[in-house]
Length: 127
Figure 1 (cartoon, rainbow, N blue to C red):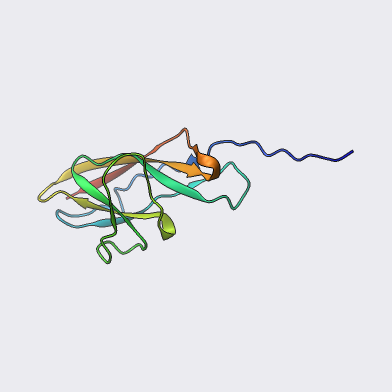
Figure 2: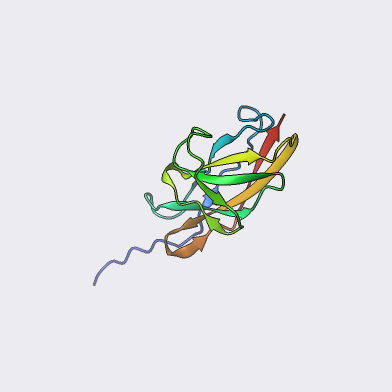
């Protein structure tokens, strides 16, 4: 008789991420954000952020580093788009002359196409 080890396929979870205090940005300036989260799967499972709603007053770009503006990256132009870059960074660029608060949301996608049931709202304050 053999022993079978069962690992439940629970959806990944995201950490609440409010970008506002230390990562606020200024009018017409990009800010770089890392989309983070954890998995209830076995350790080492790769998670990819999926943008579930776009910002209303700016644009998102998938980038490979944490330096906003160093590389424009690929425009994220529709919801349900996966961020498939090294480090899971995006840059947020406010619309010209926009000042105020903008938000977008993301969930995490695990191997096998299991999407997190929880989405994280990212809040960007533009001064």
